[in-house]
Amino acid sequence: MSCPDCSNDRTRVRDTAANTNGDAVRRRRECQRCSFRVTTYERPEWDSLQVKKRDGNTEPYDQQKVREGIIRAVKKRPVADAQVTELVDSIEAHLQTRDERIVASSLIGALVSDNLRELDKVAHVRFVSVYKGYSDPEDFRTVTVFWLPMTLQSLRHHHDTIRIHNELPDQYQYNPSTPLGGVQ
Image 1: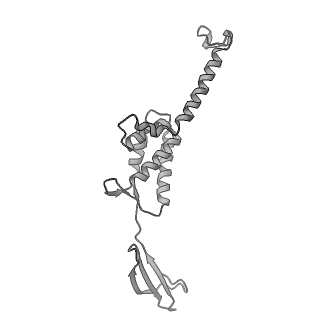
Image 2 (image 1 turned 180 degrees about the vertical axis):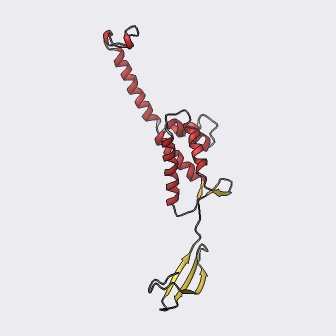
Image 3 (image 1 turned 180 degrees about the horizontal axis):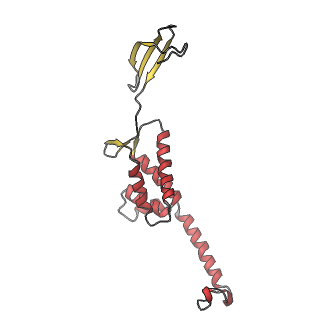
């Protein structure tokens, strides 16, 4: 380590002790040229994220597992591969910004769930049903309660549009016998 005062690259350790939490080592160093003393802290640096599962086991974070879960949820939905990639990347970026290198699997599931809710509501329900292990139709009420009122409002609007369309004069109604089903 270089001396912060004179930039000499020869320092020696004078004292070593673990901190009170036990997650770092405190070292007192002294420059061999100018005798300047400095305190350094050494903490373990994880090479990658670790995931703590519900059963207590810890395993390396696997981006492919997250991707596969999202792909199953968006199957046959109007969601592009690029959107899935962007979603997976944003979740990993969020996890990387955290101070902890060990994250709970429930946090990853919650991040996927929140992002899918914005992307595609059906995919969101699919994901949550597997993630939370839903087996009773009543369980789905908790998932849909957030966006169901908005959907009902849009259905009412759609119903009003159909009603208005049906009240149009006959000349503006759909007629399959005219070319391309256009108006007469």
